[in-house]
Length: 173
Image (cartoon, rainbow, N blue to C red; front, top):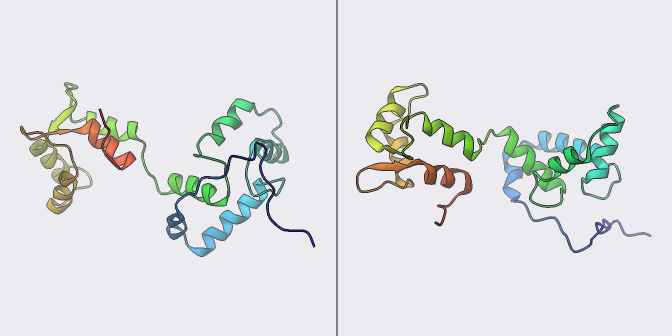
């Protein structure tokens, strides 16, 4: 009886990077099943990975045969490694959970910095966040400031803060 192990990808040495298993906790079981069905439809050659040929095949099945290799490669580069099911869930999880990119968050902070200094005084930011749009509570502001790069004059370096929000640690300079 033949083994059901998935065959190695061309180039053999590349393995799918282990994506965080926490991604499964972001979805209900029914959603995971739907993603699995979608993954199986896209994985045309049934090797357990989505690659450029799989994308070409799925586009062809939808009637689009003139997809450029650059477009397909751009799609694949959104992942940090080969796209197995866990990586597929991570990609969709990031899109569906609405995590804004660093540039988007940076542009939001720039609205409070018309002179382009790269910092905002924490009292001004606190006042704006507590009185405008989706109002923050004092506790939420305090929590934000605990992980924020604030200098002795009380200014928040929002560029570093945006990096921390999107990457999880402060950038070394």
